[in-house]
Length: 174
Image (cartoon, rainbow, N blue to C red; front, top):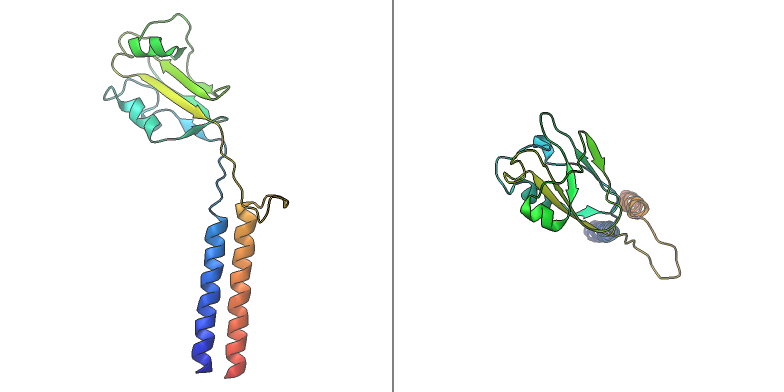
């Protein structure tokens, strides 16, 4: 009977440790990312007109992110207004490859290729940049923030020590 009770207590301790670990990892920490625009396609005339819009819609971009525009062949990159983006208006200011672009602030940014009909064929990108979201776990407002990494370490240590204590107690009862 005592052995069964120890097993139940051991399971409860492991569950509490796992809840503690999962609760600590719920902290949201967002840091700058690096993105290759278009992934394997790069900056090129896409297979369909929604290619870059689809690519951007699967991402969440934050201030500090870097965007790598890389291409071969006859292309360029122009940062334009929303109206120029919507209408594929040719502009005289453009940049050659490769380009690493880091947006200076939150908001929307628009890019097109001004070569021939590339923009009309879908070689254009709209980015929406959000403010970083830094949230940490803390026991009370008076305490300093606890990073999720240190909380995970503490939770893992708690789980290991609890398991060791239960094993020792079970061994002593045998």
